[in-house]
Amino acid sequence: MARITVSALIAVTPSRLWEELRHIERHVTWMTDAVSIEFLSEQREGVGTSFRCVTKVGPFVTNDIMTITEWRENSSMGVTHQGIVEGRGVLRLEAEGTGTRMTWSEQLIFPWFALGPVGAFVAAPVLHVLWKKNLAALGVRVAADQR
Image (cartoon, rainbow, N blue to C red):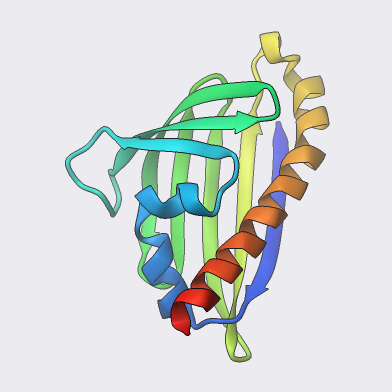
């Protein structure tokens, strides 16, 4: 299992950051590894929302089914992953000074044909760097929208 946690201080309030995060379809604008999102449920936010996310990291492309499992306004969004790589993750927001500390944590299980624990060991540092860049891109996006 790969356990990956990244965080960043984003220079907007938790409510402003949540206003961007709540729009799941927009995640492709700041998650460079998320190629596309297609909703599988009629609802577009809240617990139970499900969607297909095509994810690309280098030459590797996955077609993940994700379901929102936690939805706390201005605070947290949890998700489960079903696909080649399975697991769960959560985005947490916490006020810090005049901004928001956003922490992204994931626990991912790699199947035997993706080298299982070895694949997780190799993927973890790559995903850590990628997700740090994603948080930086999100910070730029919400700061620009605030002007």
